[in-house]
Amino acid sequence: QVQLVESGGGLVQPGGSLRVSCTVSGIIFSINTMSWHRQAPGKERELVASITTGGSAEYADFVNGRFTISRNNAKSTVALQMNSLKPEDTAVYYCKARIATRGGLNDYWGQGTQVTVSS
Image (cartoon, rainbow, N blue to C red; front, top):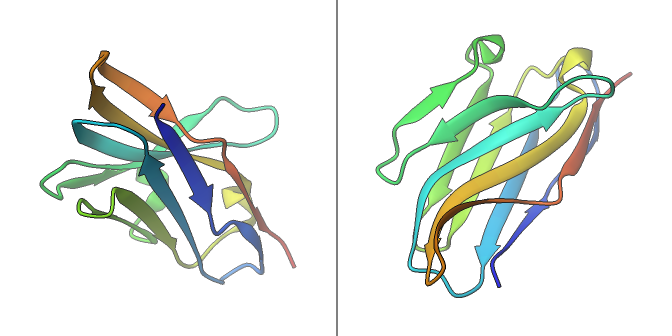
């Protein structure tokens, strides 16, 4: 059974930094694109950043150079380094991965980790 487990959320002051990580476990053949999404209260879930197996990254416009997504293919992990955080970055952050298993190619989500930006 495939599992994605996030870690690293918490409370940070405006202008601060935080790093969230996600580890994939289970019997898998390969991991394709990995991404981070977020959902603030009362809002729809939105894409923050994605990264391909080869390391090509894309970011939402609101990131504006503040976040960096990275992955370690050998360890099946993806991370999001967030700098210059703003109160509007407050949300539950979810990782997602497109994973090939014996059952085919499917998208899997983590359970989410809360990031709160507040003074």
